[in-house]
Length: 358
Ligand code: 57M
Image 1 (tube, protein in one colour):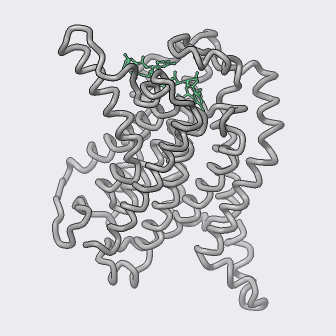
Image 2 (spheres, rainbow, N blue to C red):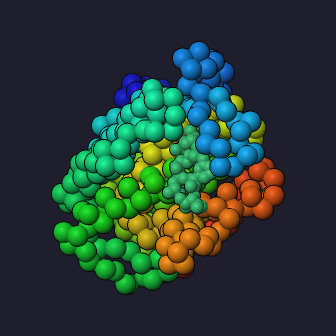
């Protein structure tokens, strides 16, 4: 909105020229999203309490019993603050802004449907896995079709650390992209089991993608850095910045001991969107590094389930996903969270180091 209303005034008042710059609007978006969250948070959490959105706690990990009744569906706040911020700061004529919103809101609605169903049943039983997957696939298909038929996009995968090596997937790029989005959403969902554990790495990934996306939309930088140039995609930096701001604002309340959980409405929307951001800046494989922590958590479940089947009932970890293993070993929750964040920061830096290393 600022872009549409204030940039035309730049001819008469030079000062409004700053609203042209993606960097300026991104900073504005980050601060706006964070302020909306911090101001709205206490009222929204009280509202969730009032409408009895308390989390049902499974009894497997004893330390979690004290968390019973903590309101969930805090992801709705992230959704609201991000959409409002984008309407204020983004160039609304940019198609990529609407595409990323489609994934973010679409995945959020599927998560919301699951959360509401769990609350209605007063236990942890949400919609069927099949219905959930169908919802996520429909949205992923719509988003991937938009990319696939976009002349600015190619179906060639960039290989991290390699300058001239690409892998052309052709029509397979469509299901590949859908797989990336759905896996990323599920990986963030699995990780969301300790206070601040999912939102911390999401904020870091948001920062890393803000940099990659800004570069991808800038012809001079892409030429210098041998990265793919996609005109117009740079505007999504404003979305990434709003994501970081809303994430920080959510962490304000989700930090240990949490006053609110994000629910599936938060974990699915954030996870699916991280996958789509990787597709938008053509760094699909690098997502495994940026979101390395989510990958490790998911792998721990795969190892646990496979080992259990293979050995006829033995466990590899005390419990999966990995954070539960450390909890059951007696590591305090806040220590696990901060160590996982440290790991994420290092992985984010490794991902950034690939910018020049190609
Ligand atoms: C979501 N949800 C949390 C909260 C959050 C296949 C299997 C590995 C699936 C997995 C699973 O169900 N994962 C999905 C995990 C839950 O959090 C809610 O869910 C939302 C995210 N979807 O926003 O609303 C609990 O997590 C805790 N929490 C916090 N702070 C937060 O900020 O403390 C969440 C957010 C909350 C709260 O206690 O109630 C969850 O863990 O349920 N299943 C598991 O993760 C289970 N693992 C398991 O069964 N492992 C087995 C096999 C299958 C691999 C094994 O190791 O043998 C664990 N789930 C629970 N307890 N609750 C087991 C221990």
